[in-house]
Image 1 (cartoon, rainbow, N blue to C red):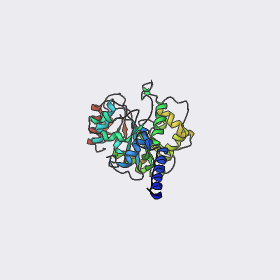
Image 2 (tube, helix red, strand yellow):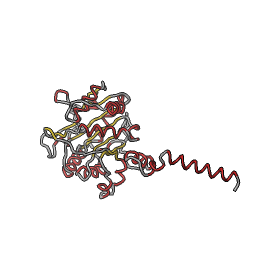
Image 3 (tube, one colour):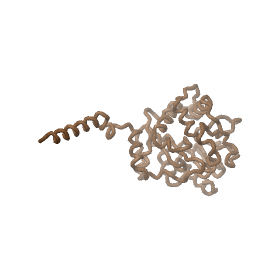
Image 4 (tube, rainbow, N blue to C red):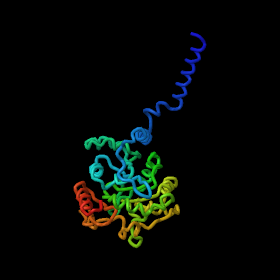
Length: 295
């Protein structure tokens, strides 16, 4: 055979051993769900995740979505009609298992590729009509921070899937806050005299979101939105008063006084209406906002 041939065979064998020792199998079949999503997203950037670029800063919207729930129906509707996650430049779904089967019935299984995974139940205890969910959202913030999309955007926006969001208003508002996008900042969306940060629409700059994930934010708050607000305050993150910015004189989030009913406020100037707990009522609200010219 000759010495050159033997050397070539040995070199190939050594390359194969090195490849196996660095985790060849893990790069193909043993990746974590997050890594699989990132790998597929990198190879398939054609996912239709962009609506309209927001002047003054790009945005990543994310929601926790429960498999087999009405939230998947709303996801399908907002993908085609607007009003939710897809009003941002990019989106991420967070769940505890793949949403592919749920989305296949709408021919939207490709959206499942943009899912970051967390372990455990998505159910939360309800206290005084509101879900608590602190541990769940702590895990969710950590999960999205590990996704490649996180580093691509100025604003990281957590949305409740049952919140009707007006893209036109969102873009107008974020355009007015552009100067804060590069600092650790969050947007207060509710008058201080009336309470605290409202969970359906949480707008953090990427540096602020990174601080939340790094710290873990272990405090005594019961509700997720109060937990996040207290965390941001303890981390000395700059708070920007959302009232008055971008021409908004009202709170950025509106809660209907009669829950599970269609509020007349759907045609008024809010960025988010919450909660809208059924697909039919969600559709009505979106159509009302479009008719008002606020879509």
